[in-house]
Image 1: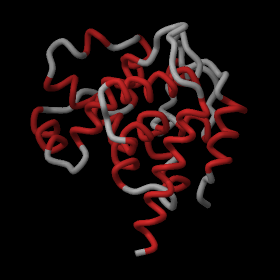
Image 2: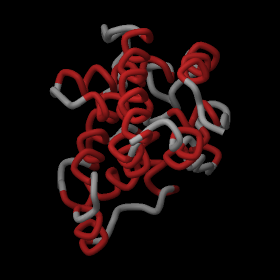
Image 3: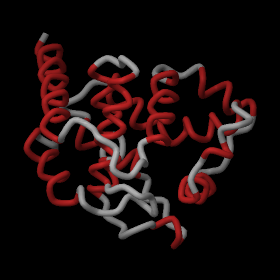
Length: 189
């Protein structure tokens, strides 16, 4: 079953006020900040949509607040994909799918990166398989959309600032709608 634009909007309206795993922001604030950071970096609209939607799996697979403290990896990077695949192309889906592995990769290739992770990100890193080996990191970097996933990961890590001003939900729903329409136009051809 595909998520419609209204379904996505409803998920953020219904569950967006949930805390974002021990961080000083809600799920919605994290999504808005991620989208805003992507826009500030002049990302194309597909990557802005991916940044905004990257943690939608948390809203589809509710595991309570801070599931990592209970040893739960909710596999959120995969959970939303079946619902999004009918309405988005790989330019949105792959950065979402790869953003967890991007964290594992960045820990392997950037000596300063691990030290910048929040406590919850460190806990989830272990549940998600830990730091990549050098070979795993090199293989990851060869994947299509790996660079977009690395960019998304860095925005994800920074999108945890209390009271940060961002465009509103309707702004990002507009981005999502345009990207959905572009995908629908390509799918018809």
